[in-house]
Image (cartoon, rainbow, N blue to C red; front, side, top):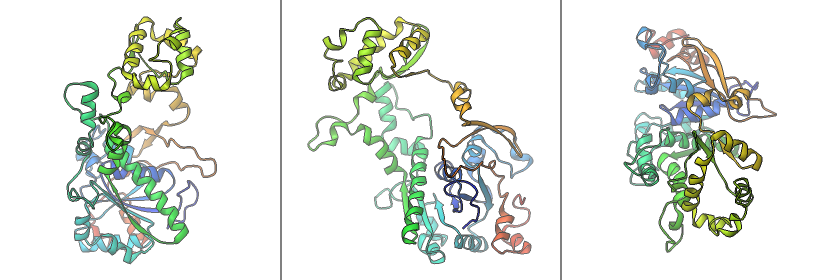
Length: 411
């Protein structure tokens, strides 16, 4: 284990991260943000997402500087080592790293890991205390076990495009965020944290599987099982409140505003604010939480019909006075310039060694007793290879033999 105890509740935990794209890197970014040492193991070509999205520099000038924006945000605070695990020398180096590691994470399919000799049994024989985590597409207990999985595919499999079609009409569409990857990545992060806690109690490592399909299916079905919760069914699947066509930012006289009139107090105050105090008691659609739930589409439609009567600013003043929750509709530029996010330090800046001045995203959590570490910029491909291999006893000559002196950026 690392001996750095300066920052964060996971300081001293060493994680070997053989994952790529978004799911695994988001998980280990979360853990690095809590103080863990994360060693990102990359193939000679690097994580594919290094070249995804906007880049400041064309990587043709230096093949090791591949800094797409998605990679940069998901891989801060990590060290990069390049190992071609199809070569025996590189596998041996990885096994030597495993001896002092606390966690090994992979999103490579289990059958491929077994062929490489890097399955749980192989690594546990080197380090019985190792927590070995596999992020899979589908549980290995089911018939989809060997299927490849990506965010779009899992969104489709878990009904998200279908729900979007039910909500908005037209063609089915994906949610415009890496929803499946990021939901599953957070499952990975808490699973690792819980396994570390368990090991503190019993001293034992273990193998953990975190499948995307099941993770996102839980996320979706917990909202949308609805009447299918019951046997026999009490209605169709789909939570009507979330699927109501008027559950969207309301159009005002000059823009849009997100408003949630939720409990009895909010509704009494809302009707009073618009000069119709008697409607709360007289209109049974609004008089109780149960009635509002049963008539939710009519409720949303009624609010949508009222909102154009005032400007956005007028509604904000009225809702502030009535203590009714609302929020503006931010663009991405608005979000980056949001005064709250900037005041808390969540939106920050750093000077990246190759990319210059860049915008960074902070950790959303705040800790009183174990302050969180500042994260180093996302690493160049193979930036820490020589350092890490020499740190586990390899000579310079052996390092050159393992990786080839010209194949990585050894800094």
